[in-house]
Image (tube, rainbow, N blue to C red):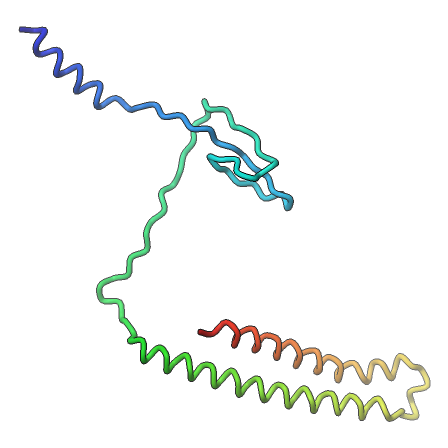
Amino acid sequence: MIFSRAIPLFFLALGLAPLSVSAQVYKCVDDTGRISYTNSRGNNKNCTALDNTQAVSSIPVRAFTQPVSFPKVSSDTQRERDQTRRQLLESELAGERAALEEARKALAEQESIRLGNEKNYQKVLDRLQPYKNDIEQRERNIEALNKEISGLR
């Protein structure tokens, strides 16, 4: 009778006991010196196997869920917003291109003249530098706008 009670308790205790699962973990260092940990070496060449007796902890990733009351936008409304954004960016781009052309003309005009107090060529370079800076800024703005436009849907 005692034996018949002990068998279910044994299986219950066995079921509650934590199972020991062992997986190989690798520490990999890429060419830039960034360290990552993985359970498969893959194509990584600079990987070393970690000791299996070390404790490994992982933090579970929370899934992002939108609240039920989160506002939703219809596809037509979003399409209109995207189109409006594209038009604004393209008008800004046209304005920047016109400003770049004006800045180049202003630099060319300033390069063609020489003031009487500029016997030292460094003074000429100092006078022209703001015009060159303006051109560089306009070119960066055009590049950023083109990048922004290319990322639109």
